[in-house]
Image 1 (cartoon, rainbow, N blue to C red):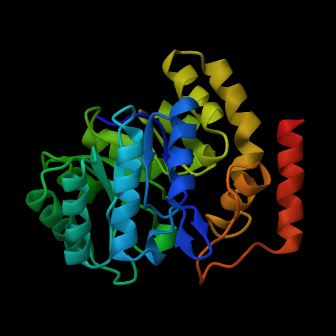
Image 2 (tube, rainbow, N blue to C red):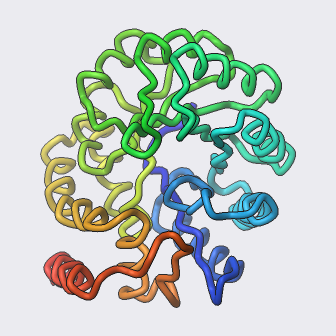
Amino acid sequence: MFSGSMVALVTPFKEGKVDEKKLRELVDFHIKNGTDIIVPCGTTGESATLSFEEHEKVVEVVIDQAKGKVPVIAGTGSNNTEEALKLTKHAKEAGANGALVITPYYNKPTQKGMYLHFEKIAKEVNIPIVLYNVPGRTSVNLLPETVAKLAKIKNIVGIKEASGDLKQASDIARLCGEKFDLISGDDFIVLPMLALGGKGVISVVANLVPAEMAALVDEFNKGNLEKAREVHYKIFPLCKAMFIETNPGPVKTAMALQGLLDTPELRLPLAPMSEENVEKLKKVLMDFYS
């Protein structure tokens, strides 16, 4: 159902508030540069520090600005099942094409607990749901066998798999089959994930270089492996640079340096990048654009 280059959209702030004007500009920028799907209010969108009102507003603005030109998958996850349910219901009401629902963080639920969490949301909200597994952020790992059980629920259509483990991704693909969307959650391994049967990526670096990430996926799907590999190695240093500090600090800083954002403003507890790492980031950008 969902495929291609999907951007994990940043949330632009200005003097502590969501910058709606810039948010709309970013949506237009992605449509113009070949992004296939826009994903607001995920980890990169700093969903953890958005109020419910802000979260819902960002989703509404992105859907409104996209105007149906590209699908929108709204981040709606929480470590509180009732909160995730509320956000998912809002996404459906707002006209989102799908919901990205992260595994509950901090609580450390069992596999059974995670299954029941996702099952409840899927059964109560008739919207296509993409599971989101990112153990490095949540301290829990949604195992392939649990994913396979969840894949039997009609409107659970895919997973953003960000464990970085290609063995785990292979098991998911093997157990769930081609109809279930395996989506890379790591920019570093988009190419091997596509080779395993992945449908695309929900990308951080696409905030900065959407055309290049779209080209990587497109060239692979056309069978141009050599060209896809060329793009992979071109953007690889940028992908690494996006994580020299906690995401989305580096990508917002890079976007500000490139004029895509007015400010790299983050919300506490995330802090501005260190001067040392900003210089490293500048060097990677200079090398990329030279």
